[in-house]
Length: 270
Ligand code: IPE
Ligand code: IPE
Ligand code: MG
Image 1 (cartoon, protein in one colour):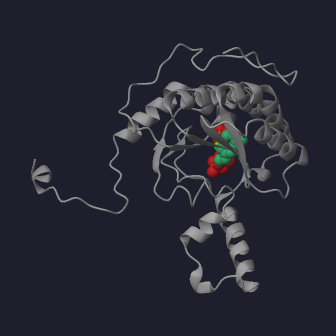
Image 2 (cartoon, protein in one colour):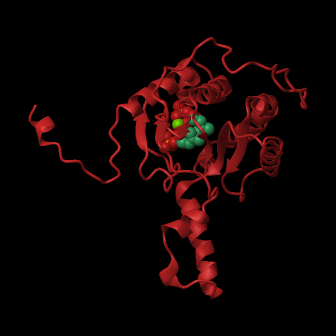
Image 3 (spheres, protein in one colour):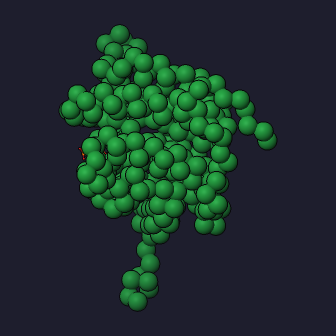
């Protein structure tokens, strides 16, 4: 298939998914996690350890992100959610915040055609208040451009916070109650789910965090209630598709019980 023409001057040259020549392990059919969520962490430390300012770490993380997206498509992951900017990240210096806002736009400009070519559907999850209008606009352009793709749904979580997502959902349910459209007794998990930012997003199966930190930092709280958490020490700028596949290997060794239990006394005795 010949590549489509590029629509933006910053677009990177077209690359096939497997430009690195790496192939994912042959996992059993149907075993790959459907939804992988990643806290892309460790950019600042990566840069500071090299005597560079933090923003150089964010810059270096762009390659990791594209490699991981390609690796997710190769692996057959259907949903990938990436934490790009949290509702708490406004606490950073004005310079870093400004850089990150502009950088998010640049990354979309540079790679949206490439992702479109790979069959990636780009979506945005997050809050409007405070987020730069230009960032929202670029996210919407990417959503529009890629809306018919279904190889992988990439949710860019920008100005996203898990608690506020639940608060926003609850507020909308409360409005329905106040308007008499529903009764309080009718509120259930499904109803809250329907009011989250992306209602049809499936629950997270595999939750990865790079950089060695072992916390969720408010990422996809509702959606990750039964996710398997895998924490890898690699800093995000050193992360690549092989790391993603390593996390999937770890995930496949886990026993997901969802609260259930199977009685196997013989096995326990051994
Ligand atoms: C993650 O890297 C990227 C964003 C939060 C945007 P950090 O910037 O948090 O890097 P560390 O954790 O300080 O090393
Ligand atoms: C979470 O990382 C947010 C993103 C990766 C976008 P942080 O680096 O902001 O989280 P904390 O401060 O270590 O919890
Ligand atoms: Mg961090």
